[in-house]
Amino acid sequence: QVQLVGSGGGLVQPGGSLRLSCAASGSILSAYAMGWYRQAPGKQRELVATITSGGNTNYADAVKGRFTISRDNAKKMVNLQMNSLKPEDTAVYYCNADIIDFRHARRDYWGQGTQVTVSS
Image 1 (cartoon, rainbow, N blue to C red):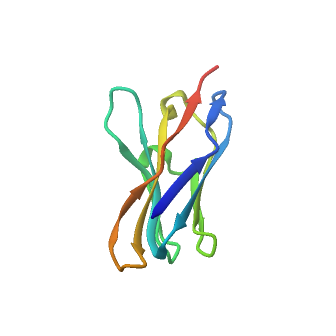
Image 2 (cartoon, rainbow, N blue to C red):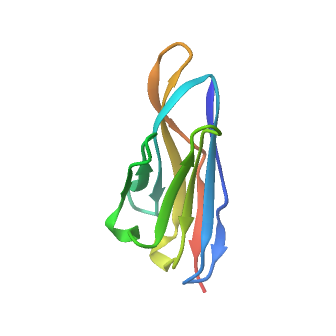
Image 3 (tube, rainbow, N blue to C red):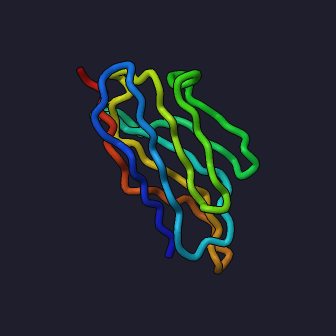
């Protein structure tokens, strides 16, 4: 069994900061790309940022320069530092990981989602 558990969401005022974390656990042989996606009410889930095991990053245009993704391969964790938050960043944020398990089966896993609300 593989699990992703995210944390760190909450309510913040515009211009504020939040840090999301996600830990992968279970029968993990290796984690390839990890990342964060978000889904606002009435909208489709969209990519926020991804990071490969080698540290290459990719960001959505809407968050470039404000969000920073990082990972700790040893701890199998991925983090998202969100600065200069805007009301349009309000969404449920989901962590995602491309994982190969001990049976050598490879698939995407999703965390449970954490709410981020940016409002005054």
